[in-house]
Length: 396
Image 1 (cartoon, rainbow, N blue to C red):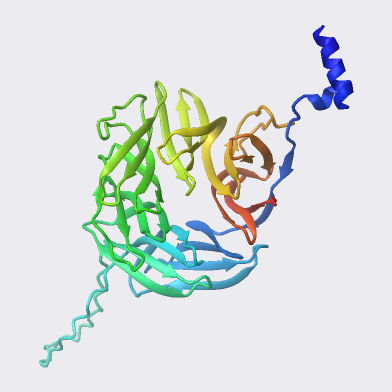
Image 2 (image 1 turned 90 degrees about the vertical axis):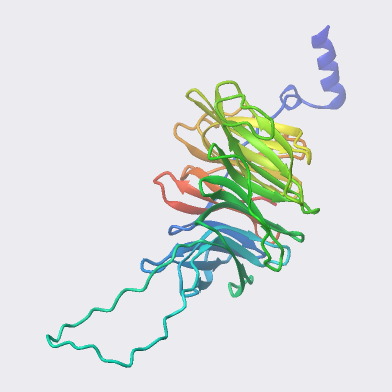
């Protein structure tokens, strides 16, 4: 009876039994653009891909390079204030200006006092010049840079030690940074004009903050991992992923733990739509988790795939793109059976339905992704021979 009804339905609708079943998605090829020298990060401003890196031996400076859509260099700039400075995170504001977050050393005033008395030197000893003193990079620093690489402003906030910055988020209400300072996770924000607020510590050295997203009302979302109690919420696994909401006034208003029994979890990347990715390690099994959250941290959809643990995520238009170092076959993807770690970029609809797949046999693990409507979706990945590589995903 059931077979008769199915046959009747096929005849009425004019479809074949094969097309009535769900079709698997074919993998499209990722375009490898160029192999890059060691850089700290990639961002996109309009039609320009911008890389930032730290250079110099005697003195650390920041190098900026602008590339066109094909990877050809458009311009090259250097941020050099005369003291050490390093870049750690970058973002682009709504006007296309580039914001680089890092640390720098204070400028030491030269001693201008001169002696009017000549010291006796009967043996004619030649005195070697004393090398200049290098101060610690204790200044938390923001560099505001134009879309063509010109330095527009530098903003600093003195700290008691150098900070390690893991993420930056900027919108019309300000700029926020997260990272580690004095072996503790911290959050700090500044106005668009560069006025820094107080540093907020969240937890102890048992907590790490990896990503930050500012909200339009000035409140802040931070994401990472923790193996300690936070805001009354106890540890469940070996290490839990954490989602933390901080008010405009600096108070923690919400903590949500992402836990699995006997597992290590961490959120490592987040975008402005609250699409997050991170790893789940249970025994010898490693998965990359991709989840879209509501403003109150309620999961809207989630996907997990066996991986090397490296992943990235980015929302472009109505689709969310998830990159991972894939290590096994994935249901719904045709002929995908990697024998070694291979870069795979998946696209999902607003409801979390798999809609596309992109890969390259030359690439292994993702590092980051960047997007602009002018030139599309780009990313950084490690190649199979561990070279830093710029790639492009062919999306409409």
